[in-house]
Length: 236
Image (tube, rainbow, N blue to C red; front, side, top):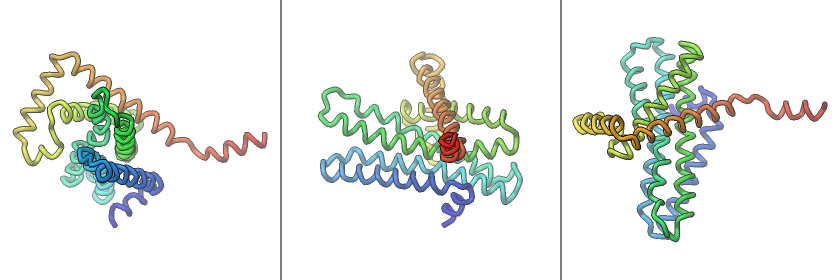
């Protein structure tokens, strides 16, 4: 399977395996909720989890295409990179599904909250891996400063994408299937951001949420051989 080969090539076998387990657990819990409680409305979480995995697929193929051509102007490479950027907001988008449990007095509040948070965390980590792949790619070509500038810009664009998805109900595939709707809703969203402070605050805060969340996870991922460090301190 090509996806598995690309995962192993990027040394992502273990984190991807854990994400598969987490995603499978989420889907199993959602399925149980649907069949045991007749709560079909939670089925959207499975679809959103699927969308959260797509950026990782596109990121791996983008980097692989560059390794094959070594040409930043290659059309397939550019198309894959654009596809990654368009679908990346789907990874953190699940956090906004918390809006579905805001109703007061729901007897299943805590069950639904934990279910959405588990799916949101899994989706966010899948997006983190895809951003890490692209971050490493940009850093290798243009250096560390440009790499972090890239991450910052992507987090801002992703927050805008999440905003469009939640408040104007745009979808990533509207780029192909309904470009006129895309232009209209994007313009409407930009106007609301420019004229309504509440919307602007969402964009700023969600951008910071993504950037700081990525920075913290990135720092944890860079820790090396914690076990050896612990053993050395024990000997001392």
